[in-house]
Image (cartoon, rainbow, N blue to C red; front, side, top):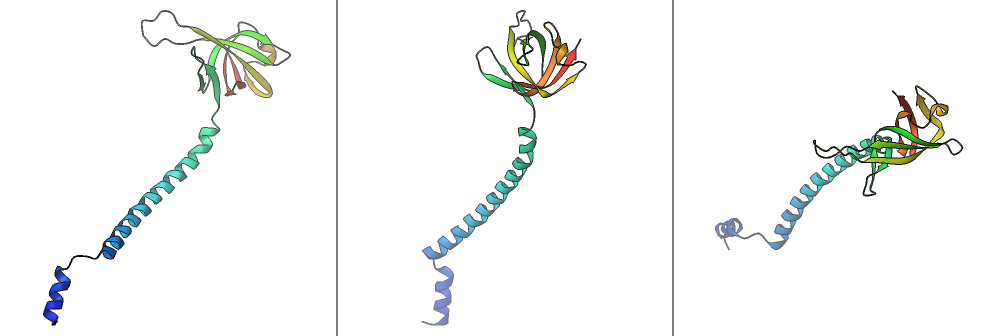
Length: 149
């Protein structure tokens, strides 16, 4: 075989399966590295946000179907107080979905206070039936109670 024939065969030959696999694997590795780096960036952002999301206070309420929701704070009227157990029942009205709704159902839930509960415009001794308060906390433990009106 002369040089001219060898040069023609190298130029016009089909790539071998090993060469195809090597190029495909290299391309996959390149895209996998890019997606892996993007996943690491996303993970870093999630870790940074995790502290603020997990530590955010959220008071628990139940809707009429019994599903539990968490809110940043809740305003309502105290309808029952148990001084010995440091518990109180808060009643509030839910808002209707339609603008013309006249009936808004009322809800009530029991909440507990602890020694570390912060009070604004009052204290635990001021919690009585009929008092309007705004509460915040975790689940069913009020860590902040503000007396309103």
